[in-house]
Length: 145
Image 1: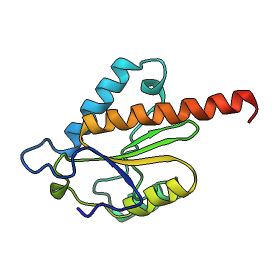
Image 2: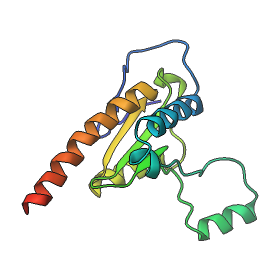
Image 3: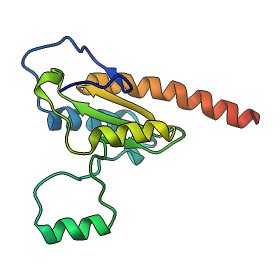
Image 4: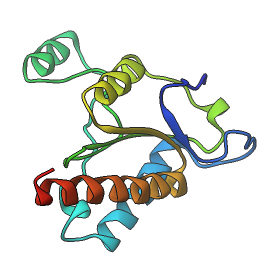
């Protein structure tokens, strides 16, 4: 997987070797998030189910209902929103799915905190950075700046 220069990457981009699949990294991230932040991020964070095989009729119906190709793995509403694509620790074992990169770049243009995390630990590190940004923005808003 070729990383994009405009998207911040969390994790060791030099790592090569055996590592869990993306869905296992996602499951671990959400389990920790819901355990550590049950009344805040764990309550509102979600992964939109937008991948998988569908019939042509299912695809047409789901598109009309708002299905968007490339939506990221983790979305946490806020100001700014947290938009994170989780990939394997060894990013050479991952690939961009159709629409993911345009989705991330557009989310960034719209003001979201956007990143790619190489594994769940990297996603938790990104979350900490996002908390700092969100806290700074909220403090400025409360002061009327």
